[in-house]
Length: 155
Image (cartoon, rainbow, N blue to C red; front, side, top):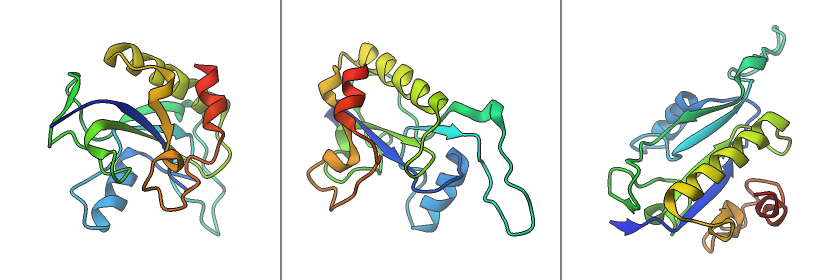
């Protein structure tokens, strides 16, 4: 068990998705379940196929879904530990935005609100909020594919 020190921001690197979809993807990789604590939707929850139009549910854009459970104290227990950032899983909360590079204004607003509330609750500051690419063992990843310095300045 470690003290919570960071919030790590990710992207799904997919145009569509949801917490249940990511849970399925992660289980296919042999994990116990979804590695993120929160998922912020973009309104595209199913993939586009060749014969059907893209289904965008505007009401789902910016919605926050709970992934891996956290209990609200400042310690990350084994059953709360994420699977999202090597070397940070035991001391961080993982948030995943559905998308690759282009995130909707609703998603970014929801992200700012969620991160602000988590920082207040856990006594963290903007400097404790990092992009996956900023973690030491990110291995060349660019996730979440936006400027984290600018995001931190917006908090």
